Image: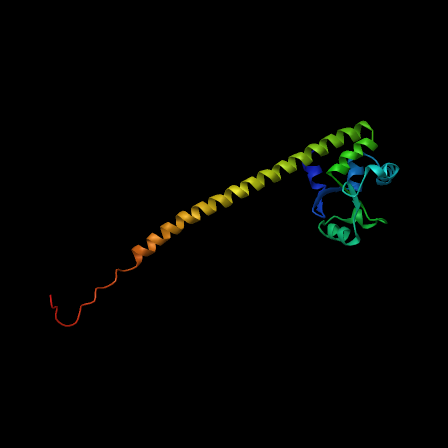
Length: 164
């Protein structure tokens, strides 16, 4: 299963990386209603931090992000979104060989995405630290340049006689 395909199916909703029920069903090779029947038979395994139903606004916002949203256009029910933990839990309720392989692939992709995000955070912090360090060094350089560019103060001649 191509990683890029699965990555495209991961959405950020409610500050969570999630996958929609219809996308998961497609990956598992089952109908969405079959997937959701399995979930509903085991609803106690899917608390709200594992799975939630999208609001109408969330669904419309998601649809508006995609040009080819016609496959979502005729839905009668709002889709369910599964977090990483919810996707992992699906492996316990869908026991086909394909479901197991797909779950393993999805879990690996979630881990890769988390590693990439952590790597980006580290890189951002390093850049920020470098900026602070170099800002201080450049401040000293700019101050020295300003001093060099500032003409020396002209000595004013004293008026009158020097008594000394």
